[in-house]
Length: 220
Image (tube, rainbow, N blue to C red; front, side, top):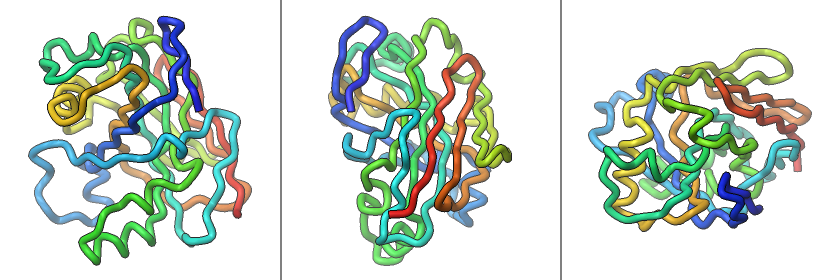
């Protein structure tokens, strides 16, 4: 999947950088009794997991418990390394709504075995991405309300000011580990309310000043 940045440049995202445990209420609903993270919890998805709005999520045969996780996505426009937090938002070209889909049963098995989450997070279609909205139109990324409805019922709703690590901090931190490149996507974590998906579900994500993301669900 390719995306077109506000500059007009069309790129294939090289990295999907995903943040776990970035809303305290979600940490609690997952039953995580550990302290809140002192630094961002980072995992990656392959670019083949991307799915544009209007697409169909494919529930894999390997999992019986795929969950939705609504997220704000920051889209890198200007790359860099060791970006100062004060300069970080200047490297974000656009924002979008996204879904970090998770095979929860496979993730639980991986956690029990102290293994990575790549399989649970990385299936094709497991990273739906909505249309991009230029950053200057969005304004403050920490002042947005994001909402997910499934079949017309609100399932998740949160405000980005509840992020443990705000977008600027995430861009700065990630750039200290990975060289950020134009088109890289940062899935910034999910608020509470995650839950299972079923064959035939219709998901619609909306957010303050953002274009909606709509996908349907189909069993393999």
